[in-house]
Length: 308
Image (cartoon, rainbow, N blue to C red; front, side):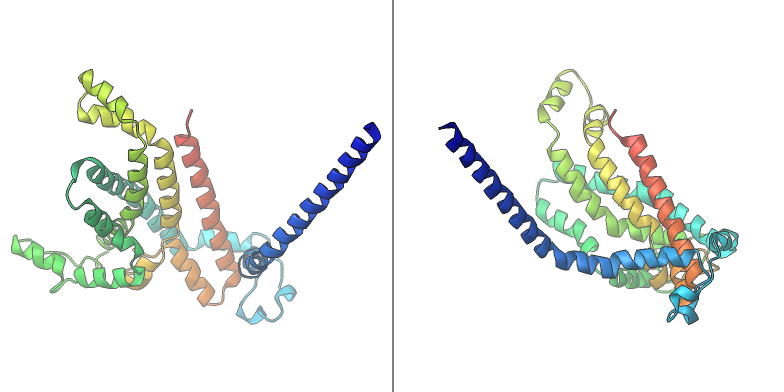
């Protein structure tokens, strides 16, 4: 009896191992197309660009990529010593420092309005606020470029109605970057709004009722109850928005071409230009410097906003 039971258990164990091995093979076969595409179009370019950043690779070396010279950190030194790249990094930093809080504030305000304030046509407002997110950035940038024209642009036309002579928004170094920040905030706050709205609807309403019975005002309830419970949501929106803004490219590329006087050129746009000029080694170094900044900023955000 005992021998038969042992034999049966061994048989079941072998059968289970064969079934698991078969399922593993099936899973690998189904995942193979994705891994192949990922390796060819993502992993290999990443590895190649890292290799380029430590060599003097130029456009003439494309056919013989392994015959280039190893230059260590010379490309990174060139990137740091390039005044245009430093200006691009500064513009990107300003874009992030100003644009991320504005986008988060606009998204959270819209979410609170949809959650508590707006009762009629709520779905219409939600779709309207989110529509810019799914609209082509090129189309949005072209429309805003016409809106901000110094002559007969809609913004300056409205300002003229109240006696204000509007500036050349995209042609003045004092207002060009700010104009791009406002446009990016308008386009991207809808994403934060949807995420914040989901977070607001998960806040227990009984906590607000108890605080209201204790005499807490709406603002104190929002500050002391809603915001602390939205910390995970806030972290997600902050990190994703920051990563996107650190790579902003389409706005200056379409609207200003980096001008005037490099006042709107971004790190990503300047890196793209270096690739276009055939300076692959320097461009690779700039790309990895941007990547390093993204990693460091993300880690800092996790550190500052994580739950204790």
